[in-house]
Picture: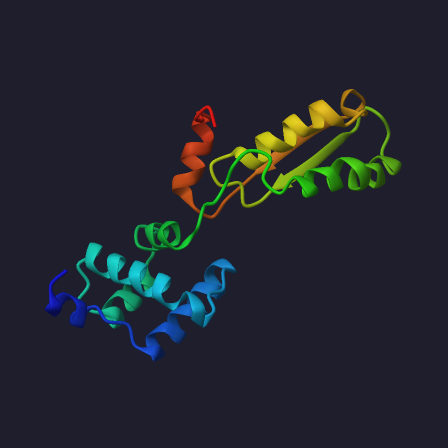
Length: 168
């Protein structure tokens, strides 16, 4: 990147604070000061991609946009999508060995149980829940289990909808 472009797209401490508060209100994602480099780098990329003159110009566009054409790519750039099958196995154990027992105490066999996986990233987490239930929950045939997954990053949701994964 040219020196003029870096200077033009620099992010001040006040800009960082303003953006951090705005992004938190918009998404619920909070960045502390240790993430400053991560945020600055992605903000500068988005400023340049939108041909904005500087942070202020970009931020005005962002705050007053009427469609998601500016904010959606920004949200996608700001999210970290670490995912793999059976990540954090203790959570699946807790679901099968504790939580679902509490849920079925209040439900009749045949009733629906809904599980919401958020953030779902590219889909490994909700698929892992399904596989874990099929393999380890003795009551899986007694209830209609529905797994809903969602994520704030639209790019990873498209990958999740494809459902194509590497052998790993």
